[in-house]
Image (cartoon, rainbow, N blue to C red; front, side, top):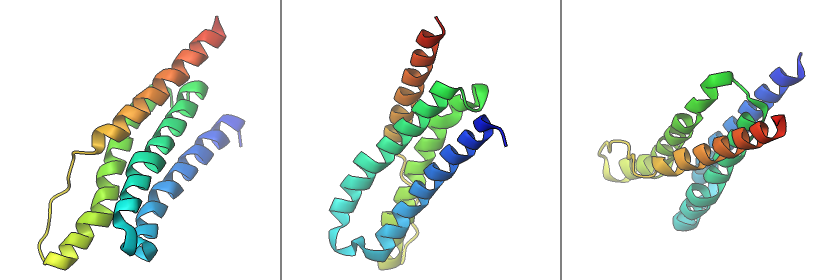
Length: 128
């Protein structure tokens, strides 16, 4: 397997594991500190993941022009993570179905755009 393909797969796998672990951790034990979980996941773990993954994609030019879809992907990660944790818990408690919230998705998109921009800029500077 080529080194570039291996790098792409590793980056995608690590990102996916982080994004899947966050809701699992919520359901397995953060019930007593939902606010702490929310702050840690939505303002530290997910933005750092989006920034780092997008930076790597920009530096290595993974996925060509498709890498510019990463901000949309990370915006959706925020929506899905919020829904899979707090909104499902609220659905269970109230017996109502709540629609997904899109108010946090800008954080994932912004962190991803920053990482992509920095990665592409660094790659461009290195080429000169």
